[in-house]
Image (tube, rainbow, N blue to C red):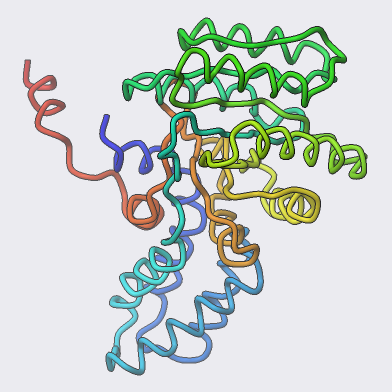
Length: 316
């Protein structure tokens, strides 16, 4: 299944809710007036885009309508789609050039952190990279065993200690093993105990110091995993984590199970943190690198034309 189709299917609920409301609203207007802008802003806010981002989208649209001399509501949807794509574009690519590179994954219980790590490991392995996992979330019950299961599914190695061990020590041993085995990507599961910010901050700072000392010139990504179904609560969670940790990107899981996909815009625009991956299904390959164009298309357009191989299968 192609990238655009995955995004399209994953955004089905959001498209039917927010984009469907926008479409219906535009059809109810014969002319572009202030009421149209007010209705659009309300729909965007209800779609978990966030107040600030919704206002910015409306202001950008207002300017484009004026600059391009757009007079009919039918032409407005394309402008909104282009604005959304532009707002989401920038820094969405993973910067992993060095060997090894390090990915730290943070997130509270229940957001799909372990699943994300397993799918990410499988993705990089499928690209021909050698991947090593580090089980540094040592305080959550069963976290180590769960990561082992995903390591087995993805067919990659894992470094682990006993439950309750020092997370920084696990990261240290993972780095040493990674260097000895000449791995391309080290992915470390780390804690997400947001209710105890001081402990979380101390733990992450210790991990950062280990990486700085052992891999001073390595590329590093610190990814925060968020559950898309929680809407603006995910944005608030990201804001809290950003205050205590060095976050380079967001992984937004369960996008296919919610009508709150507009939260992607709020995260990128309000928090200035790029979305790096989105989860659009349960399959191993349903963790997708974020693509602003595919997202904007999937948000406003129904299922794209069938691919040649799909047409051939239907005809058989």
